[in-house]
Image (tube, rainbow, N blue to C red):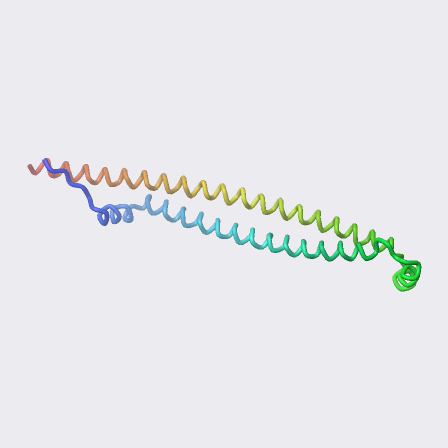
Length: 154
């Protein structure tokens, strides 16, 4: 008795013709697109964190300029801004703390996006596995049907 086994092209054509198999493919494609969007969002937030880091460096540098000021500088500052060097030190210092708070929130956002990325990665793996299993069943069923026809002929 000879068993009929489909070649790769036949198996592929059989799977591609099946609507449920195609649904797996479209779900996988949609999930990959969602992953790419998540990655884009991560990149944007990481750029924002970088920009905030540069701003933090500038604000801290400015804060240090006012850590200790001379009486002469304090007079000029008080006359032109209404605040002395110490006030300006604390203004910049507090500004740096606010930037740090925003950076922390952005880091949390990146972490949440990373979780979403991982969930989508798992979903793709699961969909691929389910699709492969379904495709294997399709092929086995078709091969069994062909073999039954051959037995009936013989």
